[in-house]
Structure formats: structure tokens, C-alpha cells
Image (cartoon, rainbow, N blue to C red):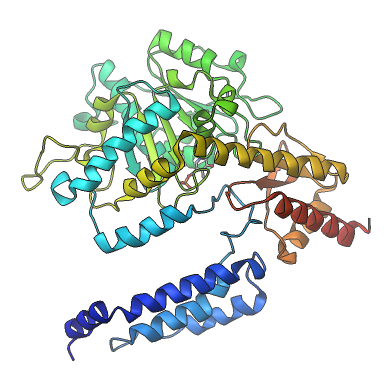
Length: 464
Ligand SMILES: *Cc1c(COP(=O)(O)O)cnc(C)c1O
């Protein structure tokens, strides 16, 4: 049998897909009985994958079997309710099912002619997101892999526009001899923002850092004088504390002088999608670009970032590409909004998520994360732990002891318990544990059980 015949058979018989489904359901059903972080045995068993690159085509069923047998136990059980690391979200069942369906479509989202359905759903998502977040009607959306790329797109659009306003065509003339732009950033800016600044050639040494307050919000009084050459980087959701910057005052000033404001709201922008938390994002609609993830707070599958930009022209100019074989259509061609050409049809899952949840569902999901975070903080505090932040959104910063060494050991003990997973950080010079409630699955019981893991770990390390 040739390889092609073999693959035809696999498609026809479909047993491979039944097998994948069985493995997937088995995974889902047993994930909650496992430790959140894989056991030492599961990690050691990863040696099963170490071999020479095979010479012959393998047996598909056996490959899937190996992957499930040794791969599944070595995953981090992130789909359960007790994973609180980074800002990793859970996954909405309907978006997971959509992923299965659309994997069979295998669409390329680059051009309308490659996928009319994706093009239309990108347009609809763009409208819906503007409505949800109350952004200006003209706002354009780029559907990219994650917030890191979204920030890159936002800053590229900003650079194009601000230099264009100075009479400089960045695409043609580049950096050499260009009027210098100023980058004004929050002292606690996310590393993805800093990376984008470096990658785009602004130079990290040129960043004008602005101090923030005890909660990690930028202090407007500490802002330098702005002008038409400034890109101001604010955040909706400090990665440690979850704090939101005072957008209204700063956007007002920026708009007066023609500066550009980008708001990084990878997980926090969704607060603007619920009335009950809308006070956090007040004034954000006066910025110029916004980066946000679908795969964090909205609980979509990974590889779902979005850049929103009120200056469609600047965005498209910054990311343009042309070649004779690329059809320019009257429809939305997604690649003109993104650095990539070939791209997964991720807007399909976003459309499903938004249609399934609706405004009420988004409110329930997002506010629910906030409520669980509040519960976490309240129960930890009652158990004698110091909470370092005002829990305004889904983040809790905990300082279990005032000894950094012991804090590190407590963190390790919590992680090793397998009861839950939380990460460490350094905040305002102190070692802390950061909790991020990001999954729809997390119940009040999951929170209480995790608090118990904190208490046990402290006891093991400090004896009380
Ligand atoms: C996660 C995160 C990013 C990076 O997003 P990716 O989707 O991982 O690329 C940027 N900013 C903030 C505030 C984040 O939480």
C-alpha cells in the first residue's frame, strides 16, 4: 500500500477519529482525578518519545495510542478547576467542539477566496467586539495568534500613523533618519509589550518609564509631557494585581496633542464586556488600539489573540503586502490585517464563543471569575495570609510569609501537592504567589480546596 492509499483508508474508515475521540473523552473524564501538575513518573515516562527520526511511515493508531498513553499524563491539568497559573484560561465546550469541526474544514484565513465563511465571520466578530467593548464604529480587528502578536500589530500601526503625521512614510523609508518617536510605558508593563518595543526597533533604552501606585496603576501626574510623537502604553489588567490604569485622564491628554494610546488588555479588556465591571475600563474607548486574548478570560482554545485598532488605514498600511497572485477582493481579506499570510480560521471559534455566551453569558463568565478571586482572597485572609492587592478583577497577590525564602518553599510545596497550581512572582521587591482565576470550571469548592493546600503547605514549611 502506498502512503496515499494508506491515508485514504484512514479517512474512509474513520477508526482513527473514533480512537482520538475515545482518548479525548478518557482524558476529560480522568483529568480531575490527577495531580494538577504531572507526577514525577509521568515526566520520567516522557523518555518514551526519545528515538531516532523514524525511517518508515508508522501506524497511525499506534502513534495516537503512544501519545495518549504517555502524553496525556504529562499534560498540566489545566482544564480542571484548580489551575491558577499565569493567566491561562479554560476552554468552553462549544469552542472545543467547533475546533473539531473546523479542523476538518482546514481553512486558510488569508484571503476571502480561500475561505468566504472565515472572511464573513471575521467581519461579524469585528462588529460584535466593537459593540461589546463600546469602541468607535470604525474600529478594525486583526485575528492573530495571541496578545504578543496583537501588541506588535498595534505598535506597528501607531508607528506608521505617527510618522505619517510627521511627513515620513515608514514603509518606504524605514527607521534611518526618521523623526524619533517616543515610547512611554508603564513601569509594570507586561514583558510581551517590552518585547514588541524591542522587536520593532524602538530601543528599550529609549523607553520613558512611568511610575505606578501601590496597586500597579500608572500615576497620571507622573506622565511626561506628551506630544504628537508619543506612543503611550497602558494596561487593562496588571499581570500581577489585575489593576487597571486610569484611561480617561491619560487618553484625554494624548488626544489633545495627537499622541497614540495602546491599551494592553490581554485578559483584562473583557472587564469592559460586563456592566458589573465596566468601571474598571472607563474611558478606554478613547485609546487608539487595544490588544486582547480570546484564550484567557474568554476561555477559547489557544492561538486566539485580537488587535483592535480605530485607525483601520494605519493598521492596513503597516501590515500590507501585495503580489500579483494575491487577489484583491471587495471582501475582507484577513491577511491585510495581520503579519502572517496563511493563518488558522480562529475567528470561527471566536464567533461561536460570542454567539454562545451572548452579553449575559460574558457577564456571568467574567464576573464569575472575579467572584471566585474575591472568595480566594477572603478565605486566604481569614487563614492568616497577607493579600497584597485590591482584588478588582481575577488576580490575587499573596504573601504567605514575610520571608522570601519561606515563601519560595511554600510555593513549591503547593505546586508539588498536585492539589492546585499557582505561580510565583516578585512584586514591589517582594516574593509573592500570584493566583489567577481564569477558568469557567472553577467552583467555590475548588477555591476552598486550594486554600487548604496553601494552609497545608505553610504548615509543612513553617510548622504552623
Ligand atoms: C498573556 C499576556 C500577554 C501575552 O499574551 P499571549 O497571548 O501569551 O501572547 C500580554 N499582556 C498581558 C497583560 C498578558 O497577560
